[in-house]
Each structure stands twice: as structure tokens, then as C-alpha cells.
Image (cartoon, rainbow, N blue to C red; front, top):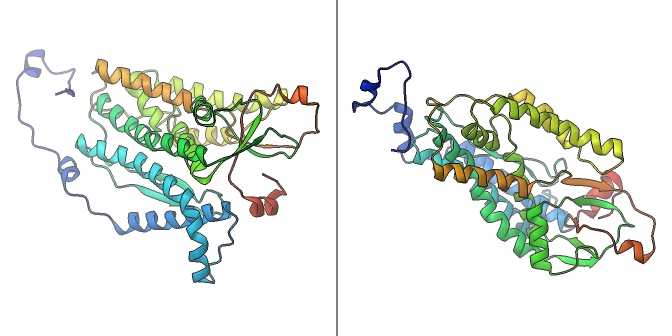
Length: 360
């Protein structure tokens, strides 16, 4: 067995004597054949509807449920966004859930969180599962925490690659301004690989599939933030159980600095980091102790843990979203020195004009 529970107060000789322990009731329930609760199913279907509606808006469709037949026809155009996005979110949560069941940890099926596209333009606030019992060891905690991000990113990367092939590439032009998406190392590398163009000379108007893939990478980043009980917090706890809170505090400070420093220097910034700093402090910077906190990760899991930290680094973008003001035209020689691919969201013309007269 990889997981061995030790008890400090017990004599050494007794810890080496095999004992029979009746399985706990929650563990037995974890092995039962799962039944889909009505609430989970209803939230899944409702979230699929809201994300499909969001995708239809991106394609310029006017979805009105007062006219069901017209709405159904309009919603068809949103499937190219909702299907890959829901698959990524579903894979992420099922990675957690199936790994929990593998380790006999009682956990719920995923709860999806729908959002009205008129309020949150992608149509969902994500999804989560509930662990009804603590993990026995740091090894189990790592397996459960890391399984979700890796499962999700395995679908997000193909979505980005396929979506970039279907995206429109135009000459670099910052004169119009608009909503720009940040470039992580992974997304920028995939853009180089798929588009095969000089990144200093193009705008990329993302297809809905590419945007869903970009969101999948972004969700991976947010879940791997090294704080509290997020997936990244589980990984950090598995690696450094006694330094977890210190790392969480340093992350909160970093969130504040990622807003204050660009603001002072006049660079683009994402105000969402302040929201995350407040959110993680409200949720708590600590991490519940596993039953056995002393047994370290074995070499294979330690390597996987550091690979998970690397995954966070390559999917991280300090400014994932930014509204950029139009720039005055400048000579071509100066334009040619821009060092970034500018990725725009799929068409959201009508809604964004209503919100802030922003052209994408």
C-alpha cells in the first residue's frame, strides 16, 4: 500500500503488527454505484443551456425564449462554444470525482453553476464537487487535487489547437481597441505552432472553440492557484504541509501587487486579482490536515506534483483580460516592434456595445 497511517503515540512494535479495521461507512458509500441526484442533473442541463446561449450571442444571434422555435434555431450556433467548454469543465470535475472514488473518499458528483449570459458572458461560474470526508494521507490529497486540472487541460489543449485553425488572423491593429485576452506561455506557444505567423504582426480573432479552450486553460490556472483549499492549495499542502499557510499569504500579497504595480506604472492590469485576494481570505488560507500528515509523497508523486506546479506556471497570465483603449496610428516601423499576439474574444458586438460601446 502506498498510504500508511502512522500514530506517533503508539509503540513502534505495535505499528508493525497487522490489524483488521472495519471499513468506514463513508468509504463503503464511495464504492456504491453512483446515482445522479436530480439537483446535479438539473444544474448540468441548465448550465449547458446558459453556455449555449452565450455561444449564440458570440455568433451575433438574438436569442429570445419568447419565440421557442426561433430560439432553438439560434441556439444551434452556440454549440461550438458550449460543447467544448462543458466537456472541459466536466472532465475537470470528473477527474476529482473518479480519483476520490478510487481512493474510497466519499465525494459528490459535480455541481455546475449556471450564470445568465447577460451578467456573465460565458454563461457559467464553473463547477465543483464536495468531499464529504478528509483524505487519509497527503498522497491521496495530491492525487485528488491534481487529477482535475490535468483532466481538464488534456481537453483544453486540443480545443485550443482546433479552434486556432478555425480562427481569423488579421494584420496587427491596435487603433480600434477592445477586449484583449492574455497570453500564457502555453497558449502563446500553441499560437506559434498552429498559426505559423510572426507574432509581432497579427491579431487573432478567436473562434468559439478556441475561446472555450482558452477558458479551459484559464480555469486550470485559477484552480491551481497555490492557496487555501483550491486544487493548487492541495498540491502545495502535499509538498509542504507545514509551509502551506505561509505560501498562501505570499500569494495573497502577490495578488495585490499584480494590481498595484501595473497601476502605478501605467500598464494594463486585471482587477480580478483583488477579488481573488479577498475571496481566498474569506474562504480561508489554511488547509485541513490529513489523517496522516507525516508520510511524504513517494518519488513518482513528488515528480507529478512539481509537474503540476509547472502546469500552473505555463497556463498563468498576469493580465488574462483587459479593455484596451484605441491607440492613435503610428508609423509602420514602430508598429512592427510589437511583441505580442493580440487575441480577441469571439464576436460579442451587440452586447458589448450596450455595456460600454466596446468594439472587438
